[in-house]
Length: 237
Image (cartoon, rainbow, N blue to C red; front, top):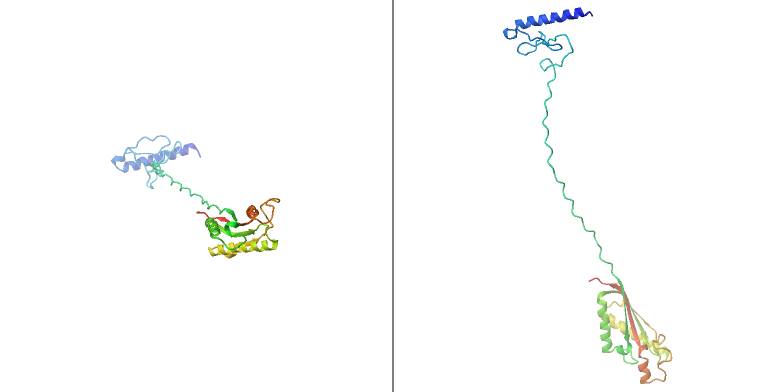
């Protein structure tokens, strides 16, 4: 399109705008000289508009940014900065729970006691003497801190007399010991007995030589004995 035609249209538009502004009243009778690339304004600074509500442009230069009145976007309002959130201290860590320590396992124990048969019995007898009962009471006292699983009583004799007689005597003596222990509260199924007779002497061969006499009987005293052994677990106090 020829530039002459464009300029004529622009001039015509400006003339029409002047005419409209003259008719709008004395306050808008004068126009502010338009700058290149802007919309037309009157002396009050208001945009000059057509009868259709459109702003009049000068028609030259680049198209300016619209004002709010002429359909532009209002300048953004600076947003108030949001206050920083208040500091919230983290919750304290829970106190560590002490690890459970199981109680120590009961310790297995073994108690062995060798009692002089002469203390328990009269010579060549199987009935307990008062001193023998006292000795057994002391042994029972040791069992208070032990959960006894089994109690073994083994009887021994010296070599005086026949082997058969000594075997029988050793058995009778440990049975007397068991009877006393059971009467003192120990379960009978926990007490076992055995007689060894003269088969396991303590004295050495060649000692205590000679026929039966008070001297030989005294020399053979270590062979006459009752061994009591218990196996169980220690009771924690």
